[in-house]
Length: 284
Image (cartoon, rainbow, N blue to C red; front, top):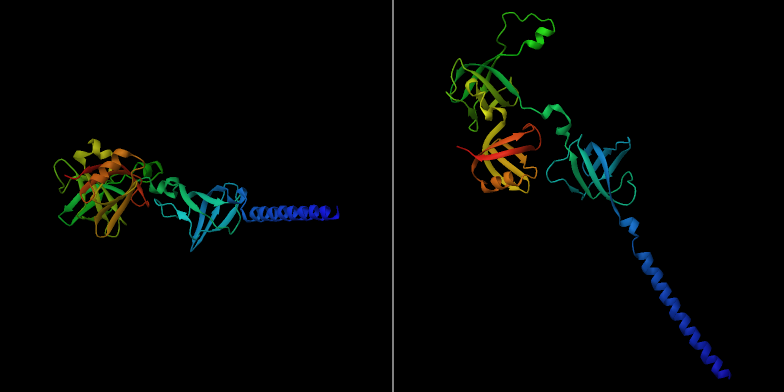
């Protein structure tokens, strides 16, 4: 009888030890396994305030300011980040914390789309006073209506200042009878109008009623197409990036014309990081 009791007790001890070991292993596994809360991915909508090496400072719509560790984060491939961009920031956890590491940054509203500065290209209208293969000299014909409404004396005024525009190889001219002295012309240009501006698109008075005159256009060679982004090389000093903005037809045309000269119809100024390509056609 005593022997039977000892055997029974020994069996219980082994069983207990086994259960204890199993419970210990389960507890250890539970401790090692990250909680679903810690792994959950969330996003934060905010506006970029400052960009530093490996750091991104943003402000939310509620006025909260955070500085995040952006080293290793996957950034928007279309837009190089800049202050003023409205972005979506992806991170792990439930609530954003100052100094935390973020995973992704995508631009939801580019800064250029929030200001009128990038709505139009620099443009001047005037009369050609001299023209050759290298430059166009134009005497401006400004609109004095606003000045008149402000009480300024505009009687007898027609011309403003005279400017000289350089003519790059990628200049595109919309005209019926060509460029000549005495003709009125609308010039879209790059750079400072007072410091060797480049005339990249001109429309003479006789072509102002043409349908194309309502569009912004630029000529160049498609250098590459990366997803929705088209890189247009105009010359060694001027390259521009366009987004096809999900337009399959425009994207297809761009892809078919890589390495070829084209004319891109676009919106949003070339001063923007990326302009929107509305259409692409082979250059004549």
